[in-house]
Structures are given as C-alpha cells and as structure tokens.
Length: 341
Ligand SMILES: Cc1ncc(C[n+]2csc(CCOP(=O)(O)OP(=O)(O)O)c2C)c(N)n1
Ligand SMILES: [Mg+2]
Image (cartoon, rainbow, N blue to C red):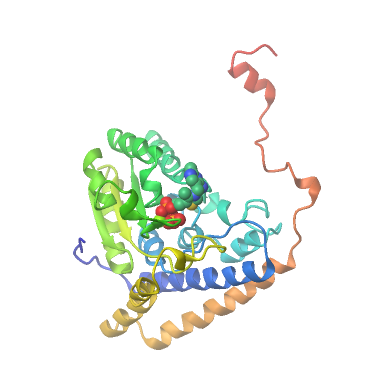
C-alpha cells in the first residue's frame, strides 16, 4: 500500500475531519438502532468503520464540487455537508427530510451541497460523476466530481466505460473505490480479476493508488494529490481505499455467516476514529479535551436530529406523484422529438 508524503493540514481541517467522522459513526449507530427498533421501512446500509474515506476525501472539496454516492451513502452525505437532521428525517420517511420523506436512506440527495444522490443501483454513481465531470469541463468551471463505489461496483460494466471516457476526455473526476472486502456476502478475492482495484487504473491511463482506508491521513494525502491533478486539468485518478464495514450488509444481514469474528476484531482494532485520536494527541495538534467536547456536541446534535425526525409528518397520500416526475411541458418534448402536436 502506498503511503504518500504527508500533506500540510490545518488545525481547523483536523477538527472538521474529526467532527465529521464522529458524526458519521453516531448517525450510523443511532440510526441503525432506531430503524431496527421502530421497524422503519426501507433498507439501511451502515458505513460505520469506513468513516476515514469520505472525510479524508471531502476535506479537499467545497460545496461547488460534486459527489455521486452509493447505497451505503450516509457517510458521503455527512462528509459533503448535508445536514444530519434532514438525513435522519429522511430515514424516518418524514416530510422534513432531504427528499421530503420519499427517498429514504438509499436516495438522499442535496443539490445545494453538490450531493448528487445516494443510489440503489450498484455503480450508477460512476457514470453520474462522469456526466458531472463532462459538464464541468464543457463549461470551463473550477470544480471536481467524485464517484464513490464499492469493490462489487468496481466489476460493473458501467464503471469501466465511465473510467475509459473520463480518461479519453481528461475529465476532473476522482474514482474512489471503497474496498470493504465484501459485496454483500461475496469476498473481494472471489470476484476481482486483479489483486487491487487500483491496478485497473493502468488500463485507462490514469494513476491507480491503493491506500489504507482506516487511516484518515493516508486518505487525505492521496485525495489531495488526486483532487489537485483534477483541478489542474490533468484528468482522473482511481483511488482505492481498503476499509471495513463493522455491521452487516444491511440492517437485516448477519455477517457472521460469511466472515469471522477474528477478522472483525482485527479491523476494529484499527478503528479510524481511535487511530486519529491517538495520532493528534501524540503530535499535540488536538487535545483530549477538544476531542471529547466534540464527542459530546455530536451526541447532543443527534438527540436533536432524532427529535426533529420524529416531530414531522409522513407525506400525505395526495403527494404521491409530486417531486417524482419533472414538470416538463409535453408540447416542448413532442416538438424536440419532431412529433406532431
Ligand atoms: C445493478 C445492481 N446489481 C445488484 C444489486 C444488488 N446489490 C445491492 S448492494 C450489492 C453489493 C455491492 O457491493 P459493493 O459494491 O462492494 O458495496 P458495499 O455494499 O460493500 O458497500 C448488490 C449486489 C443492485 N442494487 N444493483
Ligand atoms: Mg464492498
């Protein structure tokens, strides 16, 4: 695994990264608990354990940059700045949610934050981000687009086509593979033709880098280089982050049927939040007091998020078709297609 040279990182950025990692962990664990307790409808995929990846990447982004996400997207949303209160309300299916309660966990989107959406279709994020990258290049804008996908998504045809086009057109896209070793219950080595997903970068003439996705500093460094290349017009990068999901594939999955408790313990021993805490305290950049106060603030914010989610109504049946289809004038569509009115 490559460990690129350490990039400069300010105290403010460190605090922001830590706050976001803890927010993701608490959102995932409390959200998962609530969904199970209340038997809320819709599938929920927890990204607990994988927090270092979206936070390390998004620390280099602004609201103007785009991000396309997966079915395991809560961490991507929080790292990109989506309000956890609105996200929790969306999980609860309430009108106060990001998608007015009609999207649920797997379809959270917030265009005001450049968050193009979580996605129930494996690897659909990849061509979406390439489309965003094409729009950036066509308009000559200073933006980048991130495509998050899993090790399973890495084997989808759409991923290959998208990486090829992004390379041919030198688009400002960063392909971020969260390799958490399993696609549902399929181990990565069973389904992947190469040792590392990043090895495939060579096939598309783009740098392919594998980093330790449990180490937020390694992700931050590699992402800084990739985002820098994209902003400088040097084209896409494939960044593979080796990580681990702590819970089952969904709320209803029992991972102990296909992985061992020993394996889980090994990965938990390298917990990204604990690692970051130890390192910043050792280096003296953040104090234990500062870190603990962030923990307390996040817990309080999540109490409020749960109250907020509970307090709104579910959408009325009369709202069934609103916000589902674009209100596009049929006449215009017919004329565009050369059809008689
Ligand atoms: C096109 C498509 N095929 C299959 C599925 C069913 N499915 C949902 S998640 C998943 C596994 C995805 O694994 P990976 O890409 O590694 O992401 P992870 O769940 O590990 O984050 C599958 C096969 C789907 N949603 N979409
Ligand atoms: Mg996976």
